[in-house]
Length: 316
Image 1 (cartoon, rainbow, N blue to C red):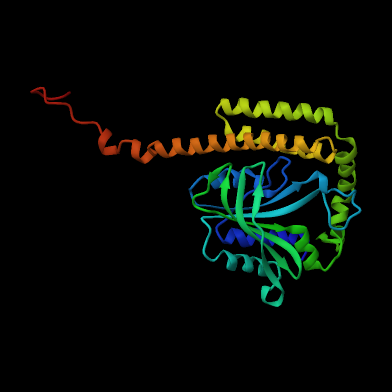
Image 2 (tube, rainbow, N blue to C red):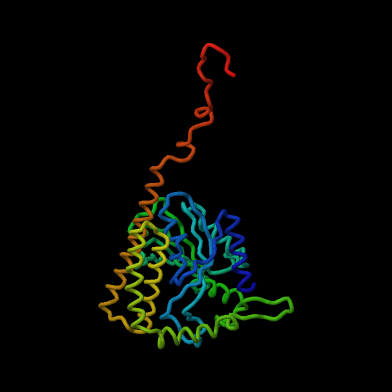
């Protein structure tokens, strides 16, 4: 099974379970959790199921394409099930079967590993899923997002696509993963698609990113997020939370942030994220307090024209 076949099979499987299969978010994020269809939608008590691939960037993890297992850009497959179903583990195991892995034939272990995102003000109870000694998935039951308790509690399933593909294909380097096979039988590897990307972005992240510019951008993004929130647009404001987070990660990769500064920068991003979540929740409360169209719109009987009172003669 090729890399793209794995993605297609997971999407088909989760679509059959009622998930809305959305597309990757078009901004630099460190994990699939940062996608607004997870971060913000899990604050809405309305039942919600979604699945998507999310390219994720962690600048400090780059290794110039020389490490077979470490990447500064990689792919996650993210699933949100809200409320969390009682059979979530069975659903997960069936998803493994959909990509050719029979759990009963392997050493599958759940290793307790609670999750926390300081920049999002989010945390949850969770487990890593180890497949024959390799972590391939993270399970999390979100407890808080942006400082707000989640109700109902959603289940998040995050697959490490490269690790799954390495296991399924039996290769020892991410760059040897078969990405796809063309109609002429030509094989495209992960290295064909992304090796040069890793080399160049590692150089950018560690050597060339302009730190003075990144400091200025962080301040500008922070101010713009606040301005947009004051203007009542949460979703565009949240984009600037993501931009601040990525600018911080690049500064961190460049070694430009002192240990004492890290706490301050993380706190600034967290404040923005919480402000976005507060505004989003306020919008939900306003929505729930507003009568629905069916409740506020008069019925046809209510607005039907009534006959004019008789004037004592014929109406011409």
